[in-house]
Image (cartoon, rainbow, N blue to C red; front, side):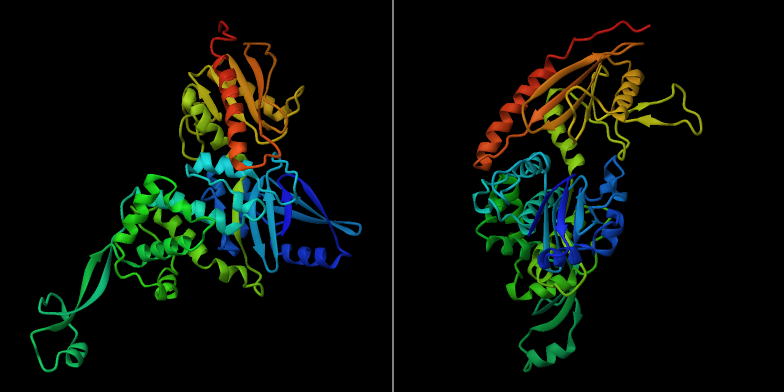
Amino acid sequence: MLLATDNSSLDLNMDDLEDKKVISDLSVLANQSIAELAKTHPELLIFPDSFEANDDDISKSAIFELSVKGSKTILETGNIMGFIGVKDTQLKIQSRFAKVSVYGQEDYFLHYMLHKVLKFNVLDLKHSRSQTNIFDFLVYLFAYYLKKALSQGLYKAYQKRRYNDSNLKGKIDIQTHVKRNQPFHGNMAYMVREYSFDNPVIQLVRHTIELIKQKPNVRDVLHSDSDTLDFVNLIVQHTPSYDAREKQTVIHENRKPFMHPYFTEYAHLQKICLQLLRYEELKYAKSKDKAYGILFDGAWLWEEYLDTLLSKIGYAHPQNKRSKGGINTYVQKFEGNNVRRYPDFVKDNQIILDAKYKHMKDNNIARDDLNQIISYLYLYKADIGGFIAPSEDENIALKMGTLNGYGGVIHKFKLAIPQNMDSYLQFKKEIAANETQLISTLLNLEGIGKTVRV
């Protein structure tokens, strides 16, 4: 497995046979947009469901780029984290904000953000200190999508059933009747279409549950919280015809993507289930130029993680793609000027915060970032603007200065990401303390920097 971090570069030696094979395998995916790869490699899962759901137009970006410089090939990554498998090569992209002391040690920061955003319980990860793979993350996403899908209700579908009894209520199956009911003893063989929970989609979920139960490292996810346990039991209860030998038949019955005007979340659940059930098949299908894996947008994940903290202290989270929140750029709407702006976080129209998943120098703010926050402050007539970024060192709160013109104070905040932790539990304890400090600092902002607007 090749290990890299997001937004970084890795040198590969074309004269080395092992590196040469890695370069050859990864060239299948290199220098192509994520949107293109999603179409040509359907087994490459993208989270969120589509990168287009993010305000950043990251779907036009590449997962990584390969370029030749002398005798070396340079692999350069972007804001994407996760796992990719293609032919004989597996690439693991961790967060650049998670330094580890042992090569291949687990990226606790990525796990933690997923835990907070997807609202599932991540285990201690002792088993996977250096072994976490695509399968583990698929199990986490299965638990997440299981809850989302079943929150819409248990899916029912018409199924053709065959019976042989005295309660005739459908079309007589003459061929079966002749075989089974001679001489006649009162039973009739017949077929009927019934509206049933025990259908191919629910069977697919049941087969996935049974597969996860066989995996000691991750099976605890199935009862990590009461909702997940209740939904697992509900699936088991409503699949009485389950037969482990029918797995391939059930997979074949789910070969078409699920579509339903109401049960929309089942489409994602179906895809996760198929990935889990076909994981070994995908893993060892090395002769094909098809990639598999799971990818996470680091900037999106950081922003959504911060929302789990800031929403508790009164911050709204406007979202462009969902047309949620934001502010009109113009006082009056006319054709062609109906433009809105969407800061990441707003509190009482007086504090504007922008999430930045990148290194931010303490004594400087990039020009585009500064212009963006100034425009937000102007539109909202807000008093305070700021940025929140991760830090590999310590929590930082800096007052950058007061703006000319209408005023407004610019701040920069950094949340420290614990480094080189011995366990995931230790990481959670350390980052929770850092979160508390950050929230306390933000609460102290209220009432600061009030200005009189002309």
